[in-house]
Amino acid sequence: MNILILSGSPRRDGNTDLLVEAFVNGASKHHSVEVVSIHDYKVNPCIGCNTCFNREDQSCFQKDDMSVIYGKLSRADMLVLASPVYFYGISAQLKALIDRCHNPIRDSFHIKKTALLLVGAATLPELFDSILSQYQLCVNFFHLEDMGRVLVRGVKEKGEIAQTEALKQAYEMGSAL
Image (cartoon, rainbow, N blue to C red; front, side, top):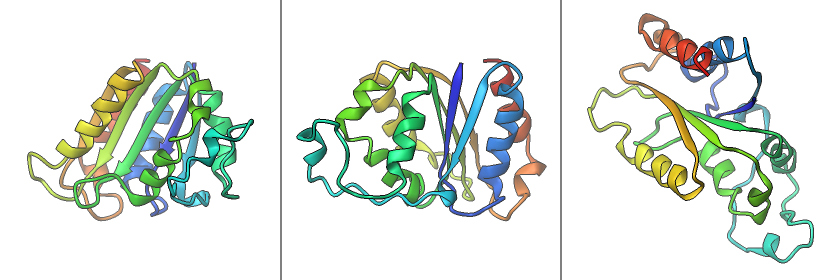
C-alpha cells in the first residue's frame, strides 16, 4: 500500500513530527510511506474561483507546490492527516492544503483508507470534537475506511509527547496496517 501522510505542523521537529515519525516507523515495515511536511511546501489557500472545474487538465491557476502534492495524492492508497490543534481546529497550513482538494482532480485519486494523528496542548475532553466531526464527514462523503486515530492532549513544548503513550500508539497503528 502507498501511504501518504500530510503533516500540518509549521514547527519542525515538534510533537506532530515525532508522532508522524513513530507512525512511519511502524507502517514502513510493510508499506511504502511518504510524508509531506507542510513546512517544506508553499501552498496558497483556495480562493473558490472554481476555474479548475473549467480547465481541461483541472489545474489550479495558482502557481505553488500544490501541483506536486496533487501528484503525490494521485499515487496514494491511504491518506494520513497529522496536525497540531490550534483553537480546536487543524493548522491553517493543513486546512489550506485540504481546501485545495476542492478540485475535480480529487476524483482521480485512489485513496480508500485514512487515519488521523492530532496533538493538542489543552486537556479539555472536547478538544478534538470539531476536527473529528469534519474528519468523519469526509470519511463518509468519500467512502473511506478509517484505520485509526491517535489523539494526544496536554502536549505543548517540543518533545513532551515522548512522555506519553502516543508514540507507541502511533507506531502500533502503523504496524497493524
